[in-house]
Amino acid sequence: MRTPTLGPAERGQALAGMADRELDVLVVGGGVVGAGTALDAVTRGLSTGLVEARDWAAGTSSRSSKLIHGGLRYLEMLDFALVREALKERGLLLEKLAPHLVRPVPFLYPLQHRGWERLYAGSGVALYDAMSVSSGHGRGLPVHRHLSRRHALRVAPCLRKDALVGALQYYDAQMDDARFVTTLVRTAASYGALVANRSRVVGFLREGERVVGGRVRDLEQGGEFEVRARQVVNATGVWTDDTQAMIGERGQFHVRASKGIHLVVPKDRVHSTTGLILRTEKSVLFVIPWGRHWIIGTTDTDWDLDKAHPAASSADIDYLLEHVNSVLAVPLTREDVEGVYAGLRPLLAGESDATSKLSREHTVAHPAPGLVVIAGGKYTTYRVMAKDAVDEAVHGLDRRVADCCTENVPLAGAEGYQALWNARARLAQRSGLHVARVEHLLGRYGSLTEEVLELIAADPSLGEPLTGADDYLRAEVVYGTSHEGARHLDDILTRRTRISIETFDRGTRCAREAAELMAPVLGWGREQIDKEVEHYEKRVEAERESQRQPDDLTADAARLGAPDIQPV
Image (cartoon, rainbow, N blue to C red; front, side, top):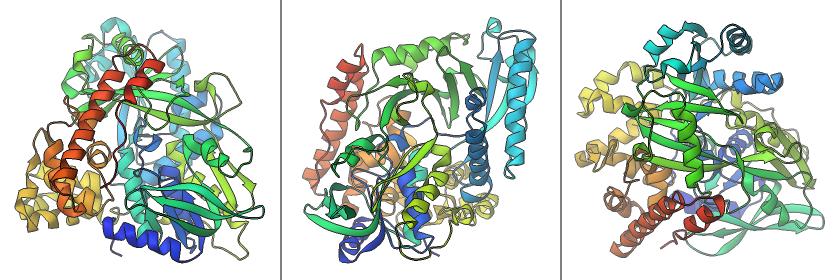
């Protein structure tokens, strides 16, 4: 089965298809939960639509720690069910569903106390490994090991000698969160889901008490139209309360936003062969390997300002640097920071005043006939959340519907990935690319790499790296636009690639080149190219300015200085 493209023509056809007939399920929200819900629904044989007001994964789902993990710290909270569920999902993703996108990553936990801490922490990690294996999908990762201080310093020479008395090393997994969501959307489309980004639900259709669809505004071409559906699923994350308000009724629960920020620094600034996990007074801090970089995060603070563009303040950056520097032999400075990004976790409100203590469980509700709401949860368990949301929606359909089967539905690019990886040297020879480039492509697209290579075969100039962002090929910009639904320069530099956080200039050096590569696919003239580049540069400057501000209020005001891009 060939994976469909998500270019401009396909987007238009999807919107027309949604307006043309009544759907079984309309999913609102194109983050990981919404995309997963669309895939779950369509693979049960339900006619399905998926709309997203901005870009796929533009909110929380592109701004996470990029980990697929069981949540080791939830063991300490005795939340065994959540950890067991997440570890099963981690194993499924690694072994079957997305082996091309999800890969193992080692972490070192420095011990600071002799005796009791090794026993306490070691018992927790041993239980973590045991629960992983017992899930039936945990044999692909190495088990944890105990290290002496000398051994730990050989593995992570970056650590101060007085910062540890020994260490534990264990494994979790990671992925590129935005790329994962885009792949989910394409997988749903390959099974028949109608999907469209930049399509905002501005109201719900009602017949008496029943919700029977949504009024959708096309933010690219203009105009509004009705999409009728027998069940609507609200999967809008931190916007859940705002979306619920459109039906004029009080929701059964509330979602509270917790801000987490991350720093990105070059690989050579932290000399280590493993990631690190450090305990802080509030939560834990990760130092995560990320290609030629490290991701350091995260914070956990309440946020009630602009949800679309959460801002990292100077205080947030100082907090992370202070905590990571407490164990590093060579401290990091502001000058070492390439990128900063902030995201909002959707937490179910009510259990606690401290956001780090709020539940990571998810909840499904049916606040009105025809409307299902799914909220809370964590990235790793998106598939379980999607299953629960569709199970609830099925109750409102007057016919028998098949059970969830996504446990056995690999994502686009997974099939044939291992064979192509084994043949990567031959692929490199055939394409004229270095084998390291082919490995990079296989780790981002899996077996869909063949489609990228077809673009390069047709135009060899696309096999060249982007100026100022040479981790990425020019072909990836074209592919992200023609096949993966990118509509604006920001979509490419921030989500289809991660150039905006992986370069010291935040992508401004390659912005014009990328816009010119996108232009033929989207029909842009010189005026729109200039507009896209100008908008992106203003966005970068607004983010830099926000990161110089002392607190959330001033950082938010600075970030809002750059308005969102408007369509052609």
